Amino acid sequence: AKTLGKSRVQLFHREMRRSAITRLTLEADLRRAFANGEFVLHYQPIVSLASHEVVGFEALVRWQRPDGVLVYPGDFIPVVEDTGLIVALGFWILREACVTARAWQEAYPRETPLTVSVNISPRQFAEPDLVPQVRRIVEETGIDPHTLRLEITESITIGDADREVSMLSQLKALGIRLSIDDFGTGYSSLSYLHRLPLDVLKIDRSFVSAMDKSAESFQIVNAIMNLARNLGMDVVAEGTEVEGQIARLRSMGCDFGQGYYFSRPVDRAGAARLLEGAQHW
Ligand code: C2E
Ligand code: CA
Ligand code: CA
Ligand code: CA
Image (cartoon, rainbow, N blue to C red):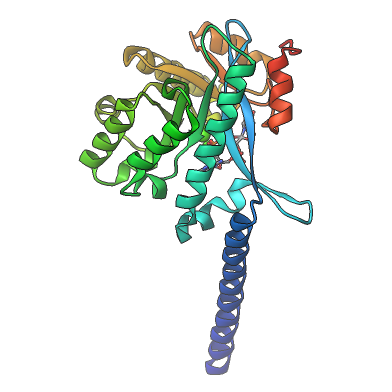
């Protein structure tokens, strides 16, 4: 029993070491990738359910490896978050998204200018100089801050509540709009939500996709819609994949959709093609 125990321990250590090495390699690769400019942004349209017009885009980061492989954020954002590299990468993402949005706003003028949404992770949100850095990027890129939306999740709200309200209020004071992402998956209380100066609520894909199968999910989406309406927020339904969802969401009074039914995230050229207006949804 003793030897068996020992070999198990050795096996355990070997696996630990292997995963630690994999992890260190990935960390080093990601730092090098950042230095070499291998991160790219893709853009997924947010579409008005009433007019079927593209009203804006969400920027989504990818790692375009030199070997041609496109790595999705689920496979590297957690590591980039843990190592703190997310701070530098996050500011790069914000700048790149603002520059691109500004170019689109000029090339495709609309009565209501196109918006761009950028994800802010919890680690970024904890950054002490987040607000001055965001202000600097807005100024340097010349984007109209009213067209910029920062997407936060309920998981930022596990920290110091007063600091969060203060940070979000400072961002709002810059003219920036705030979205609560993946809504319904976290644990924040309604009173807390009420305290935050939020403009847009994004209903998580899990509720949207379950809506057709279960009456409960349908009721949850309906309740979230009413909540958002009462708080004066716009609603974006995430993960809209099929036509039936669009009709149901519209009948509930949902303003906007984002999902594969309209378009997958596409590169800059693909987004420009969508804006050329060849789309009929
Ligand atoms: P998210 O912010 O909830 O972004 C939406 C995700 O859902 C994207 O995955 C998008 O491709 C996917 N999606 C959109 N429509 C559909 C649909 O109809 N069906 C299905 N099955 N999926 C859909 P992606 O790009 O892989 O990003 C995953 C997550 O990684 C994001 O979730 C976000 O949490 C994080 N992430 C992505 N880009 C960034 C970034 O620039 N900064 C930070 N901090 N996090 C990011
Ligand atoms: Ca998001
Ligand atoms: Ca989301
Ligand atoms: Ca998500």
